[in-house]
Length: 113
Image (cartoon, rainbow, N blue to C red; front, side):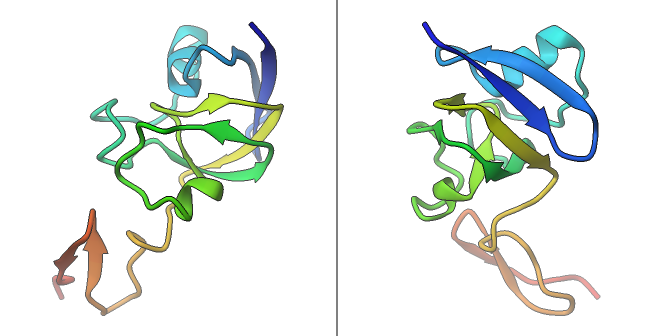
């Protein structure tokens, strides 16, 4: 079992996470306020942008394979190296442009004006 350092950009928070643990589970154990909801990789509440490092997250179903290279669902992601994560950053598939329609998990959603 290998342990990696996970640093959260701009917060000063750092945790140690083994390659067998999810980032979210360690955040909860350490008392770090990481947003989450479903804990099964679908709601995307726990999303963080990967600034540096690599994760494995084969069970993350809420984002595309391409997005998995840039974004971690902390409820599913297990570190494969030391990491720097920027919490609260969302992939383009769910980020809405102001006044535009967007998609959530592949379904079109109209913005309410």
